[in-house]
Length: 163
Image 1 (spheres, rainbow, N blue to C red):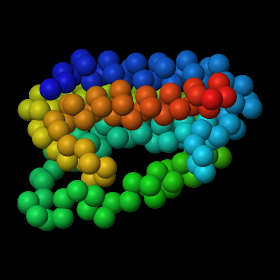
Image 2 (cartoon, rainbow, N blue to C red; image 1 turned 180 degrees about the vertical axis):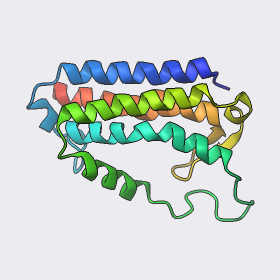
Image 3 (cartoon, one colour; image 1 turned 90 degrees about the horizontal axis):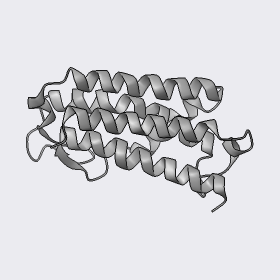
Image 4 (cartoon, rainbow, N blue to C red; image 1 turned 60 degrees about the horizontal axis):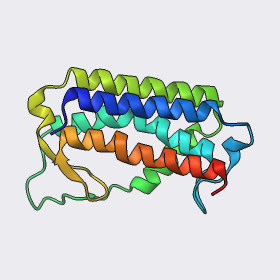
C-alpha cells in the first residue's frame, strides 16, 4: 500500500514534469495533435487540469458506503469518455497560463486532501467507476499520478518531438 509520502511525492513529480514540459513549448507546439482523431497538446493539458480533482473525488468515493455486491458495480453507466470531452471543452478556450494554474492548484489541493486522509481510508479497497481498476485507495491515487497522468505527458512529449 502506498504511503502518504509516496502518494504526495508522485503527485508533486507529475506537476513538476507537467510544468517543465509546458515551459519549453512554443505557441505552435500547443496546437500539435497528440492523439489521432483526438486532442491537441493544449487539450491534453486541459484534461490534466481537470484531473486535479481526481484525488479528492477518489477519496470521497472511498469514504462513501460502497454499493452492495451485484448492485451494478464496474462502470455503473458512467461514461468516462463523455466526461473527459466535457471537461476538456470547458477549458480549451482558456489561456494556457490559466490552464496551467488550474493544473497546479488542483493537484496541490489533492496533496492537501491526501495529507488529512486517514491511513485507514488509504488502505481501503475500492473499484473505480470506470476502466477496470481496483485496489487500495492509496495505490490507485499513486497509479493515477505515475501512470495515467504521466502517460499523457509522454504522449505530449512524443507529439511535440514529431514522433
